[in-house]
Length: 407
Image (cartoon, rainbow, N blue to C red; front, side, top):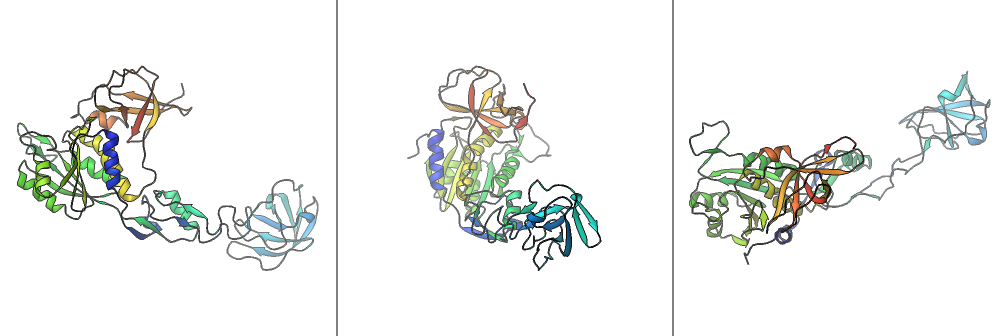
């Protein structure tokens, strides 16, 4: 069935096709921004021992009276613990991170101690905390530190390393092969003949695919010739995802979908009730998921955010795939038409945590400037009535949220 789909229906079809890829094991130093294929379980307890949080002296609470004189019987340094036991009227010189010796239940910080030969005198009352970090206050052996489907941040890598885990199981990066189509396209920097335009989509798409966790591979540009387009599909064999940009409509020079079917591809849906991007289509070719995007720059990038990004997330088995967030309009918006629309806007967060979104006036699907200035797509349901300033709308962020002042 290839009838036009709603956005939700199209995403459901894509999600069903996006089965998580096989896992691979990588060193944690190579795991930044990768998606876990299995839970990470702590191999040790952290801290693994009672440790001093300060430089000072390990003592017993019964001896912690002002003026008490304690005999210093040894030293405990990080990596070189004191092997004995602290008894009555005794102390051990200790440094931050060192093992708190047996018998001691408090650290007298060095600023509150007076040193007299081989003794230490408690100078002030000991009424605060013990200054000892108990074993396991961070996590215990066997604790699940990160769940399958989580994308690993820089801080996550530090956490995993601290648990004495050196490798993690992550989903293989999906190979995303893509090409653009059109006789009118030339490379940036080329002399422009009349009727030609610069092909810009592939540069944005490559960076987006990499940021979303895919491994992009550009196959080059296909002229408006069905044989050339079919060759591109042949060159994409083995890719997890194939993205064809341009030639997605039904004009006399739009050959991509026909070439896809001639190559043995099966169309799942042929268009989406969305603005921009109605000609977006989805199909299967051998083992590849194939998405056809419109050629107009804003349409191509908006539909890549809406459909290619969740496809990659599904192949990665990513649990947090992103979605809409709510924001208040800073200006009114007119009523929407029969297709669900995604308008460009700028999200700003004030100091109170409230999100405001400013819609852009220019909406032409060929314009790149609003896309570059904005950071979100404002979702407008089909046939939505006009919205006044202050009303709450759904937004899909694609860039960093700007910071604004308090109001």
